[in-house]
Length: 478
Image (cartoon, rainbow, N blue to C red; front, side):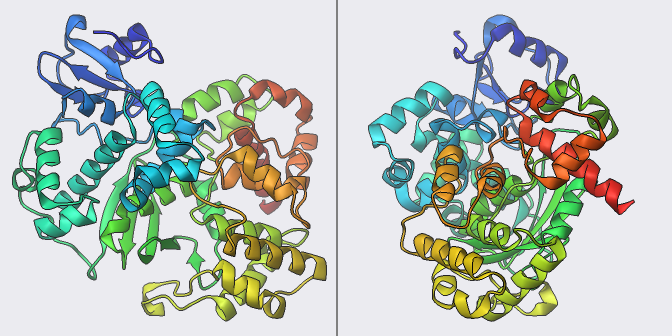
């Protein structure tokens, strides 16, 4: 066999021999003698070199006729950091596929969102990831179906459509091809749902280490009253809102999704993973940061992530509202905004946060009346909301970081710090150094770190920013 050019056979085989879980999701092992594909950490006996090959995605393995190992469940791994942090077309396409765009809008919709023809996109994805958009979306649907089969007692027909399949027959054929079992066999004894209808409990994997303290601080300080809490967020999804309850554990993130239209399962999971930066290759990041002037910070607090966004529009508005005021004051302003312009969620406050974030149109039409602060800032927020409402500015999971930054800087009332911060959190750019941020600058000064020297930690300067930010905030709190 011939391994994909982007993967080094010897390096991959060494990871397979050592059953190194750090590589789970970064590549998959296909075994010709058994016809299955596995994660590198699969506990089965290591196959002979002559019988194995390595592919970058589960879809690439399925495209070549291999079925998923039922022992190691290779689809249940963290996402690949190759597309989580890359800014190229394949990376952005994968984020949109994970968000369910192909299921909702087809390959044509995916290509149009990225600004490519379907033929160009097919070539790019096949070259980079070993499979085209339909195969990648099919693999995503198979994973969704497995979750629903094993985590709910939904009838098979409902599982089929909720997972994104066009027909029950397509669902049955795909499950047999991918898992070598019928849906009934894969389900076994269905797990009974606990809690209200449309409630689903999941375990989200991640690569260790994960600094829970930092993520918990971020979730608490960025929770908008009425719209989120230190442990929950309302998700605005394609088929309606859902409530996400987040519990950070040592080995996984426990996620409960309530009031969820199950067709939105992939989008909901994808957005929480981006919010918590769960697909980061944290060891690769810290091997670079640890060899720099930031080494003491990294060793003192391993696993610091770059929190992202589960709602780009809300994140941009919240960042603009928070310019030049305290976090507490910003939360007060945003809570008022949500209370006055946000639609009520289709559940009661007994369940948790119950107000949706205002839509771009609502903010464009009524923001002048509700927003407080300098008139220039109010006008800038309202103008941005109007641009989003009119389709002049696109915000989605696959937005290009550099394009977003340029678009933001072109708008009145948005400076370099705001554009950089949003490129980092909304578009997932891993290489943004917030050296103009007062908190970051204060930490760098206190530690005698010349931020210009941090150019050497590229492409992980966003993580450098988070370490400095964390150090300063926790030092102030102490």
